[in-house]
Image (cartoon, rainbow, N blue to C red; front, top):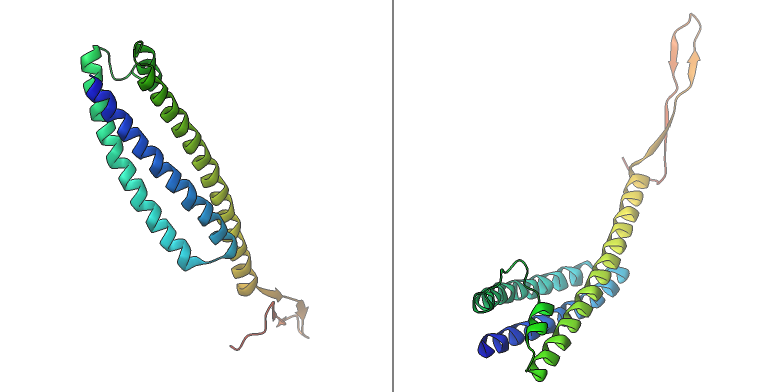
Amino acid sequence: MPGLIYDLMNVLEMESEYYSELCARSKEKTQIIIENKVDKLKEITEDEQILVSKVSKLEKKREQIVSDICIVLNVTSKSFTITSLIEKLDNSEDERDRLVKIRDNIFEKTGELKKLNEKNKLLLEQALGFVNFTLNAVNSGKKVINNDYRCGGQLMDNASGVSFFDAKQ
């Protein structure tokens, strides 16, 4: 079992490092969104996708290790948490401290990542709103229709198009 615990700690530490990298990328992304650098936004998004793929692979490995630990401890994987494992490590102070540190670090990084992603989401929504506003302003034409009548009661067509921008047609 000690080998499984060390394997779990190593996987969790690697995940924590990837979460730190994702946080750094998200901070860069915030600035890129503010500066409206679309090409760099595409690049950083691709980098993030690679990191997320790596985290996903580590998650599968972590799940397998946790499954093996659950078999050894004779518990179900649904009720198993890092905290419950920490509680079971009575005589291993170093392992327990290391796991607590890793767990806290992951909680901190995922919380920070969630906040950064929410901020970036809001910035992107604002940017899209501005783009939509600009497109609507460019494409809108103000039509004034006068219901004027000629002699004999026929409707006179007096529609005039006034556009927000001067454009060749």
